[in-house]
Length: 297
Image (tube, rainbow, N blue to C red; front, top):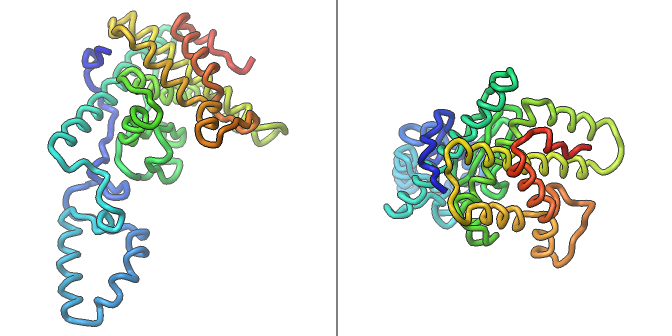
């Protein structure tokens, strides 16, 4: 995938140097309430002696200088410490920014041709945990879109999970996931997400079935992005489509449930089967037409 052709998006906020999602990772930082609650039983005995006060003073100086004592308690920071790892992660951040830039160009053209102005989402990249307009965000959640602040949140550790846990390696596999989240932004602009939430509250039945349709449409929109991005920049390389299909297959509800518990529970599906996810991505890729992505009818 020739991703550097797209340049970088200006709508990316890098919070990797932040502690607990607090902006300004460098310089003075106030500890979070969670941090204070967790370490108070440890520091309480130190308050009773001069030596303890000295230790606390050194610890406080280290913390406000950029070192988080919680890293020691959790077995070390998740932030790469070696120069090689840092360089690799910086490239992942640049890659995410480039993919976002490509979605801005593609969806901007599609909206403009339809007579509308496209308002792109913001992307926040982080490590570990941060804040979002939809509440706390952490690595276990994977990439997600928050309609409240129209932002895609990406913990860069998810790229490692795709490669090692889901066996879905490749840059285009990662791009498919990011384009899927931008697809949710398109649904938000269209009013689809609001309508689905209303339907979930107002009508009976299994709300998961509606959510599956939302996710499959976002897969189709990811295919639309790839269709027009390829026509615009010829950025695809041999094997790229197979990488995206491999990712769609690996994160299908049935596949994930089989690996986790040995059997599937269709009523609990929230994203669709592997076959469905691959099918809808390919439909968008083949047609490049929003009308082909009506998963609700």
